[in-house]
Length: 602
Image (cartoon, rainbow, N blue to C red; front, top):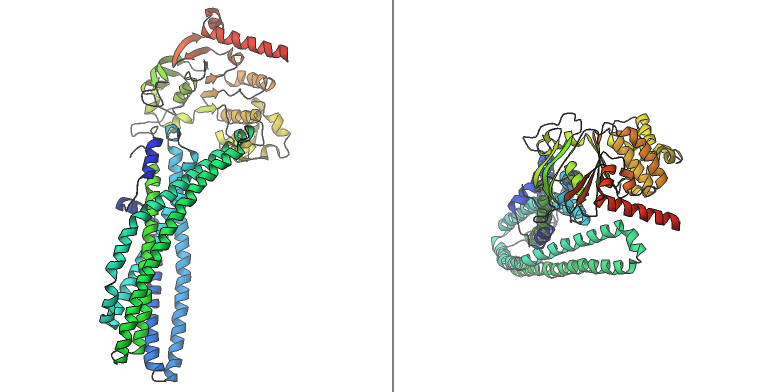
């Protein structure tokens, strides 16, 4: 499996012109395999319907030549019910065919979208680094739609229309081979036009999909960043930019439509030329007595239908080109292997006591750009390790490696003597809890959000966890209490309340290793005091990693690591580092002086 993590490479792949790819087609059709019985039935119904429609002109030929020409009313009365019966059968076939086709299409769409969604959730964090959310959404929505439309309607259309084309050709040759040759002689001209327009359709629809992905990406960015947009009064600027992006999509779409408007009339004109030749030659045959009225009528009817399969197959071909473009992007995601994943050699991590060791760890998010360099330390079970230092020093990178969101480029991260690269992720992360600076609140009730850390948690356990972190008070005041529904991303709650819920969610899982990444940054001093009192008891027996800009919150940490430029500049507890009068001393005294100044001004 290939890895596609580079955004520039992803952009380049989108700009390449797609053509027919047998491998992609085979993979797309693979999603039809579970429903092969339904597909066979659909093809069967469509085949029967095609044969029924092919029989209609022959029936009318017989009516014209044998009933109308001979003025045989009795025979006419016999044949009209046959025609009506045939129409009734075709209606029943069309009804069942449409139901089956839609049922199959929706299930294939479900399977492909579910497969892609499940795979994306497994991908490592470096897959998402720098990749716009809108483009990922575009793959799951519009690209998948295009693929499934082709695998369902497109494939069935090709099969039935080719059957229709061959059937009409055979009947035309049977009715009058001379007239048939006049029509067949126009095929090279039609093929020439199709070959000429093919590259334009191919690149045109690719451009439409590319522009559509830009629209979705910008829309997602604008919605998620609406607070910043309104804060800086950038609505007009942002709307202008969106209009420019949207115009690009409109222009790309209109260019393709212009090509279609040019192409399809060409096919219709070729058909008109063929029909004119048939009427001209057929009329002479009729006048000479070599051709009956019924045969000429049937031939012209079949001739009009002869061009329909060609037009339908041509349109499906355009649809296929669009599907190929979507398939390359969707399968590009599906073929992206998680860099952080279980291997065959990985085993389950037993219940841990929580000793974490970094052995000469180096790491960089991009090649050649080191964030951590030769970092070594050990966290004993039950210890609280505080990480302090300037922004960009590598604090968050250390906890990312502890949680194994990334693997070190050199060295080892060891938990209870096990290299994390050699244990199953689920067995490790089930014993890990984490609270981030910007907590994510899911749709659902407050109780559901807290129980996310332990799905089998009882109401009592949820309340105990919330009381432990001081969240129970504000939850009790809500109209529905723990059954209160959260809005998108928990927008109905304050930042501090969301932090408390995230904290309860981590604690209810009873993790052996707990990570707090700026978890108290958005909580007021009074609430923070409540949390600190609760954690004094709750953190016993857990190895904890704490990142905090408020140095007052980590005074009781067992070990404080001062990180600077990707290295450990100082280590020790609060008292030891204050006596050292080094970097930590400077950070602490500066922050304390700043706080005192604020209190005086307040």
